[in-house]
Picture 1 (spheres, rainbow over the protein chains, first blue to last red):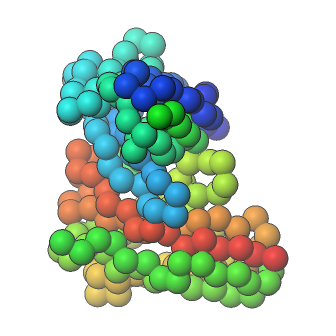
Picture 2 (cartoon, rainbow over the protein chains, first blue to last red):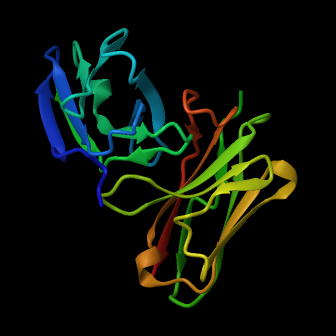
Picture 3 (spheres, rainbow over the protein chains, first blue to last red):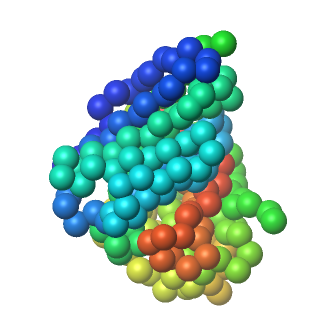
Length: 111
Length: 115
């Protein structure tokens, strides 16, 4: 039972353009969401988070949008840079300090 | 600040053998997690410790997996006996409080191959 889904396994974007990574969830009890970035041979690193009381959170080039009615969140990267090429995981929590991760989206930013 | 340390980085064993992984979390972090990441999937939580007590081990295959956290600091994860489907990257993470709005810091992981 995949409660957190990232339906696009890969995405390619030109440098300088916007990257949009999507994540859908099924459990309406999830109330905190995070995005992690993972480079090869490294552990995931925290990128940005959002609480269910918000619909947007911004940190520099990274913005996360949450649509609770659609059970959907997205990560926008503007402008995309080659160093952003990595696997991006979204994760969700029902407030019990336990995170459920999606399967990841591999982003490739083309120079 | 030193990050989460894990060893070994890589391990190849035959099925039915045993293996152990070690994790040293960030100093002062009360919460420690072990995740299993199978190729093509996201990390799956195996066990979570708060200090040296287990908070959640609902997805730990207890017939073959065991974990302990010594004195609330280092942790070891053991598999005995290993199966082919245990081939995965085992990630250790820690967070300062374990509260839902605190990020977890991950180690580089141990890549296990069972042949």
